[in-house]
Length: 299
Image (tube, rainbow, N blue to C red; front, side, top):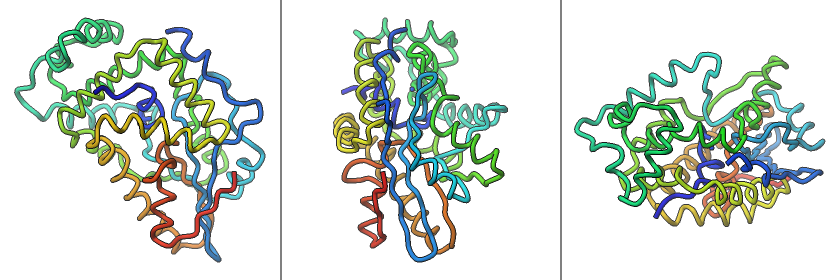
């Protein structure tokens, strides 16, 4: 079962992904994406679920969120990719993605009836098929996402993390990460081949289906409907338990431990991660509550 593209768009950090695609992606005129805080007597950690890429001009910030960001003395995101100098990230990805010899040609890694669609996607991405043949399947999938995002008019520079990093940097506030680039990519590298192929198939969905799925998810995010996000997010995960375990549960558990440790340091910090990580039974908030921390939804 292929992983649907809308999960990729909201769940991955390139992770956090038809020309009319963004047209159905509407945020309410009075946006209120969900915001939580974890607090004790001298420490506050704000938790904000993000969308990594957004259409041009998307409004998502509320007055309450603006106050929380102003109050925060620092920002922590999933991982930091230096967009001004992406070469180190690319080099890390290629090193990890090409360390498995004897891979079959990339077209042979999908069902026969999907090979024409994959060949078309590769041609649109203007990547040499021979180069992709050397790469593990997860890396092929990530390499094909850029053109898909572009076709949907989704832009990384419009994404929540990019806007937040610019704001905190302008204010001279520190910006940290929960995972290094290599640590994040290693989660993909650890996926079994069946899950990697599901990820690749998820990049081949029709523009019409992608538009509908992404538009619905973005609308739910903008109005703070965490239950709707969890429903769509978790439905996608049913197709790949290994992906759910590695890309969601294990990472959420790591971040939970980081937040628990951060509560021992006075001050206020904002943690901004993909919205799917803050929805459902395995959300970061649920894990924090199981560890006895006080989590309150403030928007």
